[in-house]
Length: 89
Image (cartoon, rainbow, N blue to C red):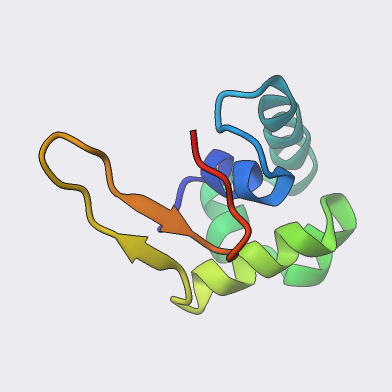
């Protein structure tokens, strides 16, 4: 499972620490419920309605196990990508 703020960062194509990620996260949790329910249970249509089609696609890919995961090495963190055009900071 990928943390919601990481998914939002990939949706918005920015770093996970960006203010717009926090703002989107708080809005989604306020409208749809807990992070865990958004990641696992909330219907994709509701996620798209509250967020965007790109967010829906990201969560759908995460739920379907379609994330590309590169393991970390030598003190470097691993990398998780839901889209080919992701940027990472």
